[in-house]
Length: 295
Length: 265
Image 1 (cartoon, chains in turn brown, red):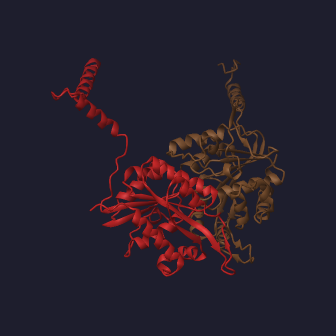
Image 2 (spheres, chains in turn orange, blue):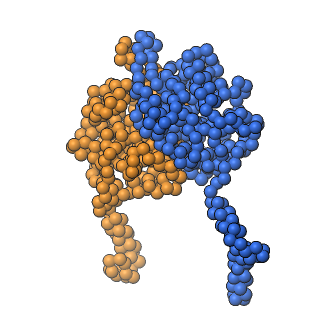
Image 3 (tube, chains in turn brown, green):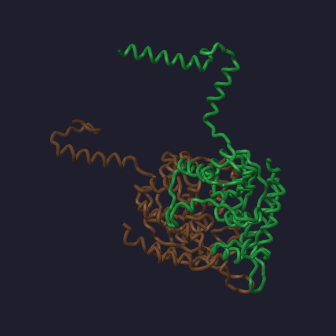
């Protein structure tokens, strides 16, 4: 019996070994674009508008601050926000032998980004697609972006539990993601949706790294009075109730939003913001969680 | 035996083609052929069919998540009708913690049921609260029922406006008239010192409206009371009808009614 390499095998045991070795060989010769990525992290929420994209970006910056090389994959096809946040919305993506080259958002090339935002002719173009088309693009994003070597790949998702989420989790499964970070605002209507997202994670076998309570409290820049506009404590309570780690509260920082609106550099502004210590702490918890796994 | 089957199949083919071509009837005109072809082609696209008993359908959308579509929808529904509001939602059909993890086709079929297999009775307005995005749900709703108008809700924030703009473009593509924009979470007033902070930016929605040639139907500020009353299931328009917030929603509802075409019948 001849195999691919034309090597004959005469006994059945030998044949099985050979088949196994050749399969391994075949698999590794198809070198996956995600082979150089050490940890994959998904950022989920059931609810829209809780700050997934902002948290994904802030987390990437916090991890980079801790010396890590980070990639961000934005699979929100209908509302890709991250290119705009990092002021790279006008950049183009290029092709290489292994696929698309992600866009580097900083001088040191320590943060790379892939988003449908880069593939649109105009940034305002609407992507009005049904499920199957979205699924096909997500699969491509996962297998055809040449990330190179990364410590972390953060995957920012759209709100809900639909086509995009099913496709993303299914396509990432062979690469054994580290898990998911769930973002919520403290109010009841957000917590309700995130509870459903927790069930989604359980059903799809995705490990929940923890819950982040975003927009948790607003400090008036004038008198320093703290108002809980979106309530407080809902995220922490949910984490306790569901038996998952609570990663921390992130406050509403109007200066950060304003700096974005005014076109200032998020990467420079972020370390000065009141949200930074919270994110640095969350990043550290994630890093601590990966140390026994690091090879 | 095979030959007979082949012959029968061939005859059936010819008969079908003949019928389509109009050979069966002695009418073999070009018009008939054209009509038949158009009929077959149109079977691919869904046909818009109004919902029985509903005079006008209004959709509340945005593109972006978390800008306050649902909060606006429930506060708008009150002023549009003074007596009991009929409400239908997936939330009533599934357990609170059960996620609805469906692909597009199942979502389409569920929407169809939520629209048509509900006893709406006689309604002047049906307000549809859309999810964020520009995908299956938005397409299914727009293609299957005639929509009187769409209202787009957004916060002033740059990235929310990006998505609101995409929402507007989507409605343009599916020929749904956009009645205007609602600027939600426009400003926050500190309850202690009354200092105003534009947490999510200043007047971004007004600027976008100008660019798109649309009207701003109103502004809703960020107010702790709106969130508190929603969380307890008593929209502010019902629980505090004399409050400034409730009046803001009422004004928006009036602006919407003004802009809707005169209802049929």
